[in-house]
Length: 114
Image (cartoon, rainbow, N blue to C red; front, side, top):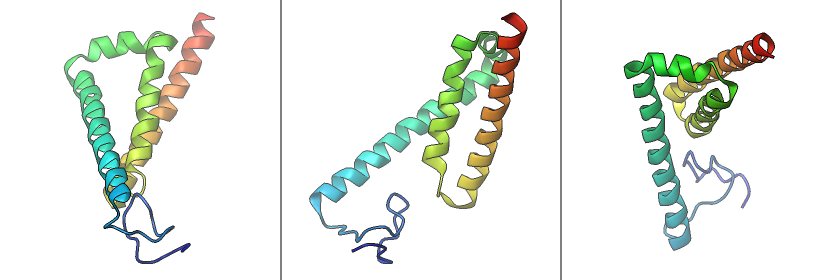
């Protein structure tokens, strides 16, 4: 049943009828929650690295090869936080801006160093 209002989970935003008692549905939702927790741990690790090892981050950002994982972290976190209310909007906006700044920095380093 398409566009069922019975489904209020952020993972399936009203697109399908959710049978919350279905075994496969429970597995899918728990797997999604597990992946979200892993993503949160990885993003927290990157934030701690920025706070605790700022000089290493600057060194990583000086090389396009080592700076590209930061863009991937931004894109992945945006996918996780999209649709999570006001806090999610704030995180998406913040990380989108950070990803844009990384793109500008990457473009600068490529142009400056050939």
